[in-house]
Length: 307
Image 1 (cartoon, rainbow, N blue to C red):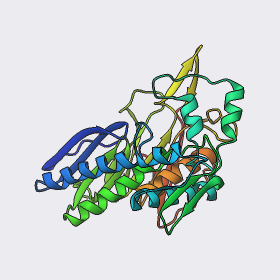
Image 2 (tube, helix red, strand yellow):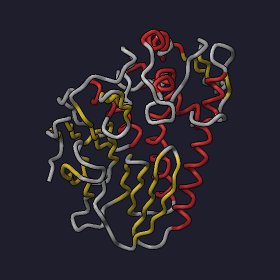
Image 3 (cartoon, rainbow, N blue to C red):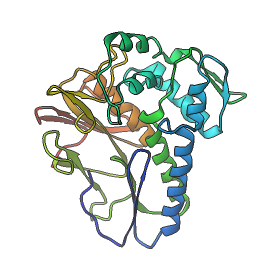
Image 4 (cartoon, rainbow, N blue to C red):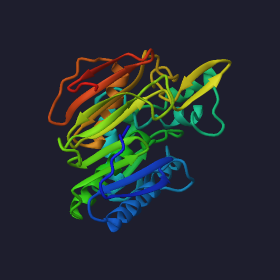
């Protein structure tokens, strides 16, 4: 999604959060700021991941229906945010874990589950059944089998924390790329100070853009169906599960990219708009624009234009 830039570029690439991560600053060498960002990513992954045996979120999942679990302030803050968004608007649901684990799309053992198994898991997808205790920083899943999955919000939260860190280091220009979840820090090094952001084509290989948009400092987050999917007998099942049906969401969209002030808001808005399909987007001081890309390769942009 990023066109090539070269201006005293400092970059580090790692694999974390289940994806390739690229951290880039422009200007004087900022190795320490980048290294501290890597430390931050690794520490948050150890707290939030559900793809390992041990993490604070996994401790909560293991204790579902048994007892509340006390967690760190960072984990509690993110779960509280996730529960709030899950209860307020459709599209993001932090309690989707049982269905994600059932399908395993994008992971080893991916399969199409039996209908009766899907119906059983749907009953566990209910953010109202997540009990939070602000005083003791505890989280309790009321029913056995419930599972939290912060995968739809964690990268946004982490990107925002890296931006805060870099600002404290005095970084004036940079790109935080967490597996395609982008956050642009400060002005671009281009003369117009805007960042050039590519919109992935749904019918071409990764890296081939449908077009570009120019934006000031912002986060660019995409929800899309064209990279992670399961194919059985010629039919593709993408990884975005509709909690109402337990099956991949039926849609003519291929992706929605949103441009927001904060990356955590981008995570939520991209999913909300992808689920609703509603292109009548109200722009705010948090949501700057959006691009809806359809499976046939057509698109509609709001608040910006493709170049």
